[in-house]
Length: 77
Image 1 (cartoon, helix red, strand yellow):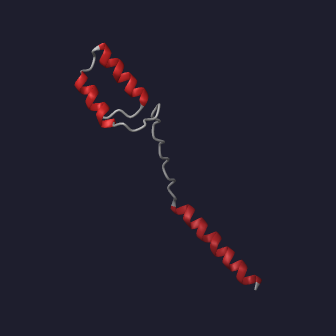
Image 2 (tube, rainbow, N blue to C red):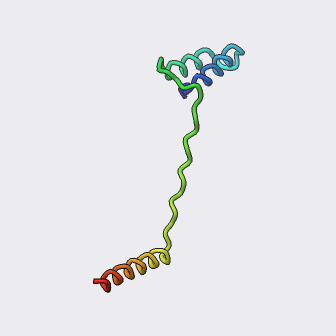
Image 3 (cartoon, rainbow, N blue to C red):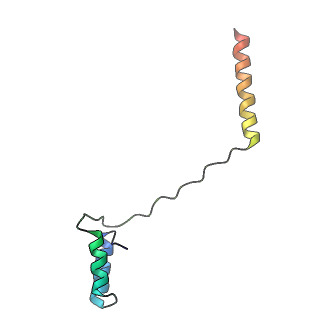
């Protein structure tokens, strides 16, 4: 699990100083993050909203209104 943000890097450095994690673990996670610029904090990914399910009644209603519109245009001509 690489470190993903500056806040995590500081937290793991604090845990290292307290002796709650070993230096090997800290170095491995820090090395996996590399020397790239990390964001201050990582935002959770946005949840996807479920698509609405179209019912048969809804599709029938749409088809009926479309047919009516076509008939009206034909009558106007």
